[in-house]
Image (cartoon, rainbow, N blue to C red):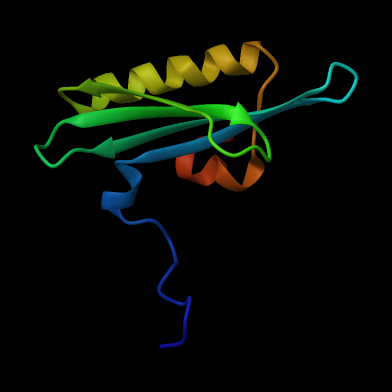
Length: 104
């Protein structure tokens, strides 16, 4: 097997997680921001939604986590956050859409 050939279609385990990156770039207003939403399973079987944001190209940024008892609650919260950011002008990065499980 050559390097990289083991990354094919997502498995059932991968589809239980979510990662989406949104960006907002407005040169007139000097905006260059990113927002990442990620769902991870904790060591104890709970689910955590991690939100990271900051300026594109800058070191650091902010991070906030929120824990949930099941994946459905975490997913609903993450989708609501994604919709809120899209209303504020952020766009989903196209390469990440298949991981989110929808087309936009």
